[in-house]
Length: 221
Image (cartoon, rainbow, N blue to C red; front, side, top):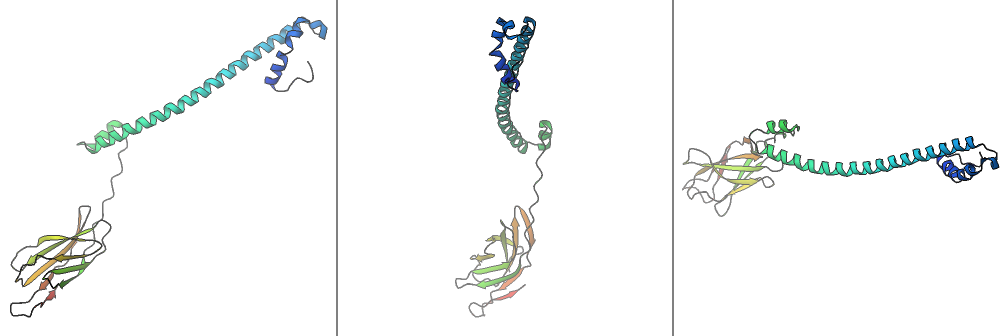
């Protein structure tokens, strides 16, 4: 065979295919026997058949790979929707663990309990000109904390909730003190996420007596 035949099998195949017909037609003209040329022609035909098979496999593989990714994306999207529905169903069911077990899905980790707010301290009271009382306190409440304010008048046996103070203010204006009140005790309690903190110590406000001067007020913890 010629010394200028390409070294690559595919290129050699095309190079030989361009010449084999002439070789088969007159092998003696180029010093070959019919047997050699016929055997070579068979090799060329087998190589072409193999190459065609390789190309078919490559095409099929590319198509199969593309289909795999498209189908896989659809599968994951639909499965994610189904899993979200299962989780929603589990949350609202009477037995969430049983739903997760039946679905073969790992239940979500339980939420970390919200720490209760710390106990308020340092209660102070200020008598305002309109007869209301501003109660303030110290506390380091995490975000979302509010403070329940309860009051007990001298004529009452128990504390009664009268309102809430915001975490950022840490004060509450009691505008409902009855006229003629002599004393009123206050306690403050933080609440966050349904968790109640410790109640503060009670602070008693003395408004004075009927004989005392206007605006007289004293405090007792």
